[in-house]
Image 1 (cartoon, rainbow, N blue to C red):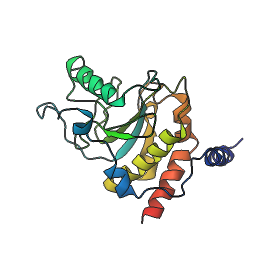
Image 2: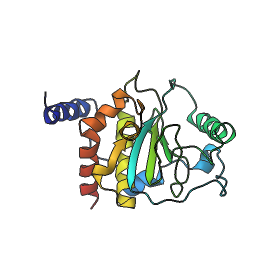
Image 3: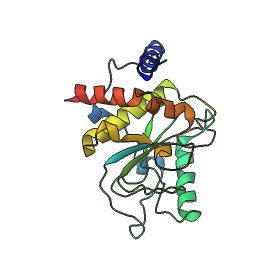
Image 4: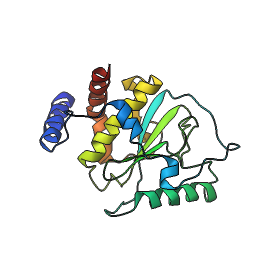
Length: 203
């Protein structure tokens, strides 16, 4: 099966599952609906530890751990922020945005500041998106996939990032992240095609 055939089959299957582009929210509404750091109980980063940067890439990550249904994403984010600062001595949560099981998007580290990573690449210039779950073990659901497309399109539009600069963590470092079951949507062109279509409709 060719990549083009595989992509067409993926798109058809997801549309049948309810993952369609019809009736989608404008990008301004996507941005408006992002749950702010203040709303989930987080606090601003220490300005002495941040690195200002300009976004020119969009990079997809996964949590890399199981995220059980019923887990409170706000509590998860508060714990992640505490761990990032106290254990890793980072300025903040390493990711700029986090997507939960229901496709809700949460703000993380301020997009004006470079993220952090446990791997050997410099994330300066990268808008970092984390999707909760371990996608070596589970499949992303349609709400998560739609949220990834919406957020990628929003970031590409706001920061003038070309669609061909949308990649996964493993494209820059020796890691399985964002997990095989999520990475395949980058590998087969699904995310790139849907983001390009989303941007074209937003004009």
